[in-house]
Length: 145
Image (cartoon, rainbow, N blue to C red):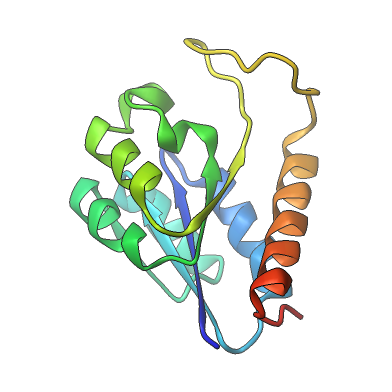
């Protein structure tokens, strides 16, 4: 059973690059990793890190998130005007309404706070997100490595 994992990032794509690298470690041959970005730089970096293909911009995100079994990225991808304004209302609504499961990194931003969460280093958040992905893939019958 083919599994499609979508990784979304913006700005320089640094978080997305790390997610792609960690997801590739557990992805089987029947797993497709798609990089979506708010800009071409983020996508280019994620594709270089190992995503199978990628696209940038509001329409690419709006259309492509519908095909993902899993969507990973910072929590800002579901909050309009976050990530320094790179996430539009259309992007955030598309991610929220997509049928796939969302696994989000709870990164604090200047204009919103997430109460009750333990502050972790980014690397630990990414490791935990990939652990959750692996658990969810197994529960769905996908076979992660």
